[in-house]
Image (cartoon, rainbow, N blue to C red; front, side, top):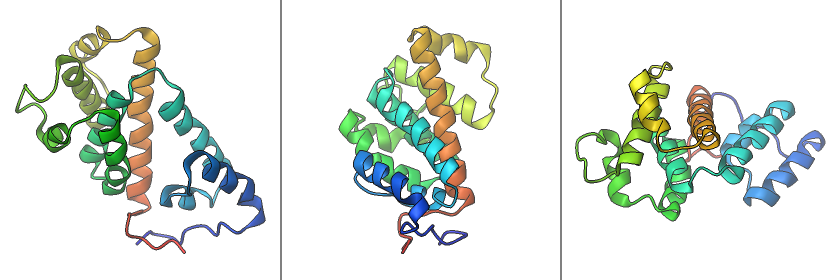
Amino acid sequence: MARIPYADLTREEVQPLVQKIKAERGEVLHLYRMLMHSVPVATGWLGYLTAIRQQCKLSAALRELVIMRVAHINGAPYEADQHRPFALKAGVTEAQLNALANWRADESVFDQTQRDVLAYTDAMTTHVHVPDEVATAVRQHFDHEQLVELTATIAAYNMVSRFLEAMQIHSDDRPD
């Protein structure tokens, strides 16, 4: 159960944002129900994550692979639960999702671009500082715009998983 109750979505001050989220995403997920305690934070969060997920040129498959790896490293099951269907729809395979925990073990599951992206994700997530050789390897696959988008995606979903886990937000919570 979450550390604090989920926000009351019937409050007048949250209605414009609630309607926007429903229009964009179909429903207000647990994450946004918690963020609604602070309308400025929820508004900024929605804008940033919408840009990451819907407006960037980085491929959906790489984006979702990164999100799933970040969720695994950070022990964020809600994040993984929410993104598994998106990952599969984007072209990440079941075999890749199953191998993600130990992705270095079988070189046949991931291509070189994916392996370099996963190494970059691991470095950013576990050490913050990315070794030069890891940055050089990933840089060869992307132009500057895509490298910024990749880096921002990894950073964004580290933010998401850290918020989820600090607030103990889980898929089976009953927010109402």
